[in-house]
Image (cartoon, rainbow, N blue to C red; front, top):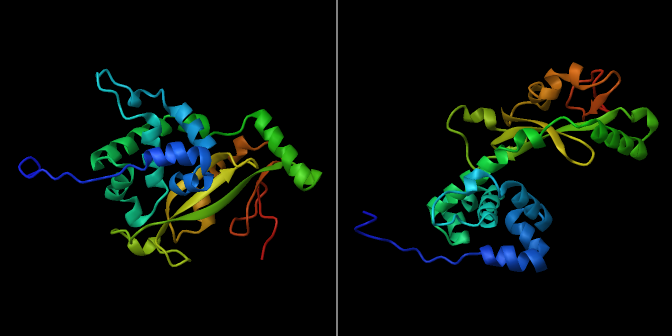
Length: 241
């Protein structure tokens, strides 16, 4: 049917507007579209542009890497109908198939960096984190150099299987995400996949840091948490209700 009844959809790309005009002159609108700063965007491009997924032996070059990343980030940063392939294609002025391809290529290149980026801090990074904690609090809290907290990732609709399990305390359907980070906000561990109704302490038990705390923490070191987490020698909520 597509051959017999071709259907050309008029589109106007926003890529030049965002990547050229907004990037240099309007940071707020740049972030509104892609949800990162221009400096962060450029850093990601530098990290992924040499990945083999963006190169082929064809005489026809691929879509520019910055454009592919912009398409993926626009989709990642929107919700519901605004994140639909058709909506993203209209925003970028490209075909729906290209939106899917760009998003896949970007994810392949980013996941290739996973183990190099999401990893336990080096000795120097740990020392810097401890110094920050001491400067912002007191010397006795020096050994608590990382933090854990949970957040909810809202879903646009109720999942088809075990949907009620995704219904959270904020009356949305969501996934639970646990993030463990240093004071400089670098993520060193995470847990994703639990339903929105799951308690933070339950989800945290599946983290690498929870399972391997004896080998990751030196004696006397701990992670800061809020009152949703259990009190242990290596997990310390400073306040309890």
